[in-house]
Image (cartoon, rainbow, N blue to C red):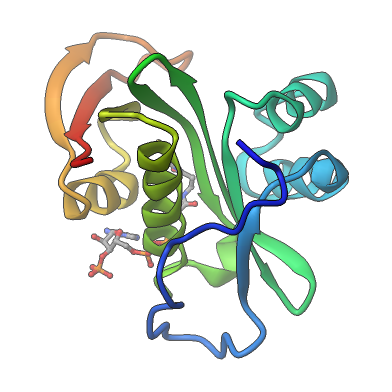
Length: 166
Ligand SMILES: CC(C)(COP(=O)(O)OP(=O)(O)OC[C@H]1O[C@@H](n2cnc3c(N)ncnc32)[C@H](O)[C@@H]1OP(=O)(O)O)[C@@H](O)C(=O)NCCC(=O)NCCS
């Protein structure tokens, strides 16, 4: 993927916050500090600096972000494996949730995967995570399986799957 390529994710949807300044675009290696900061703020630091550096550097790991007044407030990442986009992260700043940013991000990441040749998308989501399950279900993801006790806290993971039309 050309790191400077524009993401064809359609126009910004009507969002419930003032997003005149909201911008969606690909994540770059130069966004390392912003990604780390949002990861720490919203997820307690899921990935280390080295992991983030790798996510942002590798061509087969697409990522998209949304910036509001210059600050990264949402991001989504995935891995391209042959014809599959495996979604590894979708997160929105807690102060900007339920405004449509998650849906906008996910749509953009799926479009990016489709343009790179992915024919289906997969992900794992914690069974009790109703917000994320609602987001993925709304995008058309279907439950394909369950991994019992997959997460450190004992939660099951649901494996979800979506066919991507070419
Ligand atoms: C999941 C997450 C990314 C959703 O982002 P968001 O910007 O708040 O989502 P949106 O406003 O775009 O909402 C899209 C849909 O998601 C679902 N949703 C979002 N938040 C929800 C909530 N708190 N409860 C139930 N459903 C919710 C709804 O189906 C919603 O559609 P609707 O507004 O038409 O009802 C966000 O809650 C988040 O960052 N959570 C923490 C990280 C996480 O769990 N990521 C997923 C890991 S698999």
